Length: 115
Length: 117
Image 1 (cartoon, each protein chain N blue to C red):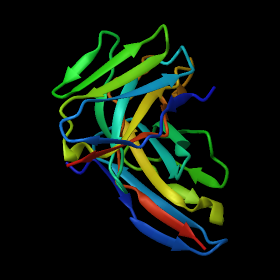
Image 2 (cartoon, helix red, strand yellow; image 1 turned 135 degrees about the horizontal axis):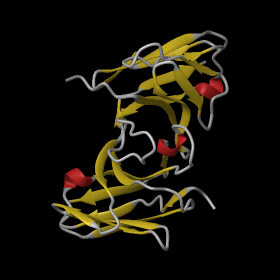
Image 3 (cartoon, each protein chain N blue to C red; image 1 turned 90 degrees about the horizontal axis):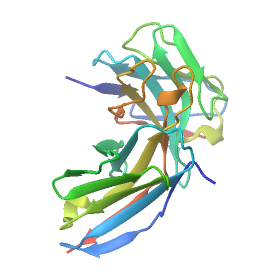
């Protein structure tokens, strides 16, 4: 099983649509979880952290299910500017040195929002 | 506040040449790392550092060296460039809380696009 798995997409949705991305991770020791956004030919940028209780930031809602090792991102009322690749990211979770902090990136899910 | 600065933005090398990719951050972050991103492969960790004088290997370290003489700088050296090292290289930094998981994610530089011919 890959460390972090995402559906690569692309997801092609009209403006105003609601779209959901899912992600699974293999290491139950992972402790921190994030969604990053990456625009074409740009660096990844932190979109939001993901907490066990679920968290919301405007039109974006992230959920974490530790028992199922599953992370989700919901985008409501999609905008053209939401078009990007969304990366699911988890910490390695090993118990020594700095490697517990190393982030493991999924390959990303591409979203294209059309007018 | 510049954040994470990478230079150069673009570079073309001939096979066998060596070069250093520069990375500097002004946020006093202890943790710094280098990733490469290739189509279909996602981001892969090359080397990382949890503080000045401390470095360790990541997932794909072969062909690369790093050093960390200061908190601010974390250069990546390509010893003898190969076409397989054609990639986009990202430097990232973060607050590092010893004994705890990362809470804040990483801040990335804008990347170096390297082509080896």
